[in-house]
Length: 243
Image 1 (tube, rainbow, N blue to C red):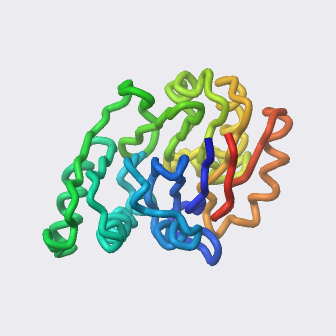
Image 2 (image 1 turned 180 degrees about the vertical axis):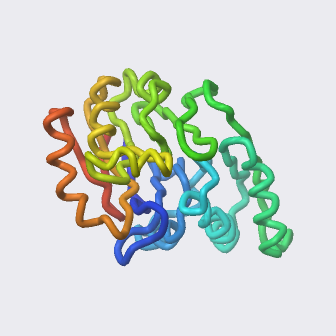
């Protein structure tokens, strides 16, 4: 299983990071933050190979490029249906996006179908759990990967990740900033390490780095390794991770 990082920033893009977006085996997209479609093009990936888009929650830094992906697929003359999964409100968001974006029906010649999750579903290779954020967050388990979306630590994600090889988990702040992180519904690197340890995964991939705190990223290794002594990686745009 190959994970391509299309965006690893939180809240807004930086000079070298788009916002959260991750491409799994060229066919499944986890979130579509601003700048991620451009990175898809830079990676020379084919947008029409993407079968499904999974949205963790409806904050702009995870969804603003949904329109770019749909229009991009139309530009590449897509014919196959596109499935979009997400929390409650996703259907309205996608419908409003296409309507308010004045999307010509003659341009998008494929069906966009939406399925909403509440957490706790199991559909084929997909399992879900509720995260703990300021709005509804859905964490996803797909094969050997668990993706947290944006969340404070919660047993829901620990349980979802059990038996997975890798956990892709947000790390918005360094350890010691838990009060600030929780104010905005996020986790620190220290908390990410504890979730990874408790879930028993082999690999922890940290992501969702704030542009103004990118200098903290290197220091996060000091927060993580004393707690989680297994493999730790830091997401960087356009990198490939084999899981």
